[in-house]
Image (tube, rainbow, N blue to C red):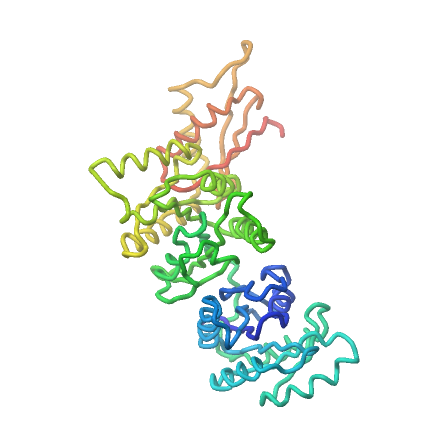
Length: 438
């Protein structure tokens, strides 16, 4: 059973994203006064009184707007309404009812869903009487709040959780494997998730930077739940002109931090770029499991060496992650898309692999016989034993006589010996040195 879904809708700049951030308890939605800043449906898990639910922030609805994104936003809001059990219709208590508010109210009443009219920006007594005019919208359940000052949020949340169906699962998503789709703008990240989910979850256009927020989507494969995270593409710093784009860079790095597995999407027509190296380097430094996905492979003119040459180029430019598998695909033509999830499943298992201390030390003892540890000024490194102390990522502690004698190249040698004996494809291995007695 799924958790309840609560969708926040309303026209631009009524405080939807501020309310969203207050409820989830952190700054997730981008809050800025430019209309259209929140353009995709933004999903986050929220909790109140030990009741968990999914909260959805949507783009502001402008009924008569003719801009391309405004029509897309209306489609996104309609999808959010279709999937939500409860709808929070947010209006501006200071400006009063607008024609757009009336149109949105008409749209929501047709949904037959549970609707709470949230009159925002009521943060002092002179605005309290303003809420009565909103009864004109024909929605009985009205709550006055100030999202900016957190006033009235407790009563609103009490009302929300009281309306949850009793048969819905309200457990946390904390233990579900999270997969972040990362890469430059316009490489096909949103299209990939839409293909996997089988619905137009993300706005997909040929305008780079369409996805500014990081967006979570639940997906099931072979009976296991995963959360897919579509992230804003990282641009070169000199190309980041808007304040919103700066938030998006932070959001992408935050999405990597919270993920278990990162899928780096590369444009087959462009090859590996500096931005690709930086973003996968960050994921590597954070100890994330990884996959490299080369998208738009259908657009490349091929011969019998195309695959080998492209893979060699990736390995040369990203030599620090030679353990990461590469998949060539075309999301548009549905070429090898589901092979990607077979890889994700395999790497997720590798990420949790644990090796017994006895077997590990058999491997290390054999490695030492074939290639003895280094010496420095007549003093030889001694490796007493090795043990695995953690998973996700796998972490090993090597006990030695003197840690300064251990050269990084010998740690790499030990790592290679472990990888030759166990399938740690796509998974970084973390090593820590300790001297006996530490």
